[in-house]
Structures are given as C-alpha cells and as structure tokens.
Image 1 (cartoon, rainbow, N blue to C red):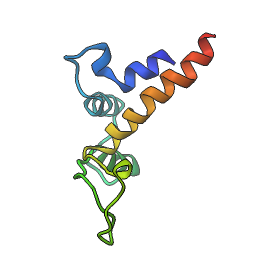
Image 2: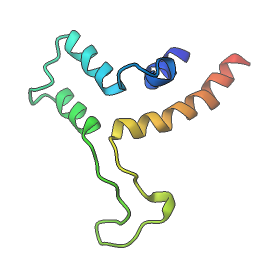
Image 3: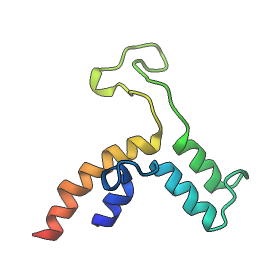
Image 4: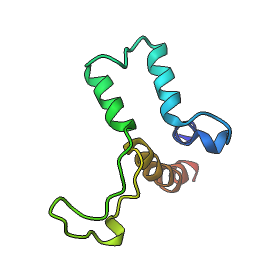
Length: 97
C-alpha cells in the first residue's frame, strides 16, 4: 500500500520528480498505448489531465457553498488529493496494526 501512496504523490518521494500525469503518460506509452488516438483509454487520460477552471457557481448561476467550490486544476490532481489522506489514514493504519 505504501507503494501506491508514493506513486500517487511522487513529489513526496522526490520533490524534483515529474508530476503524476507525466509518470502515467510515460508508463502508458512504454506499454505501447497511443494516447493520440480515439480509444477509450486515450479519452479517459485526456479528461483526467485536462485543466478545469475554478468553479464557484452551478450551471444555473447559483453560488456554491465554500465547501463545494472547485479551486481549478485537473481531475487527476483532485483524485490524488482525496486518495492520499484516505489511504494513509485508513488503509495503511489498519494493515500496520
């Protein structure tokens, strides 16, 4: 499990290391996936790594609560921010007890 946490947050293991999306892109290309085609994998990777602007209101214009604001970034970054504390607090503690 510690390896998964390190892979999700490479900057913790090596502050000068590449961002997660670059690591994943290199791994997919190494495994002969063409990320420029229209495959489901390429489409998913593009959606996860595309920058999304900050969001403070919903589609009707109603302002979101501060807890629901999206600061902007990629969905992959947001997933890592959620997964890292979840994995380290819950799963790693359970297995080490």
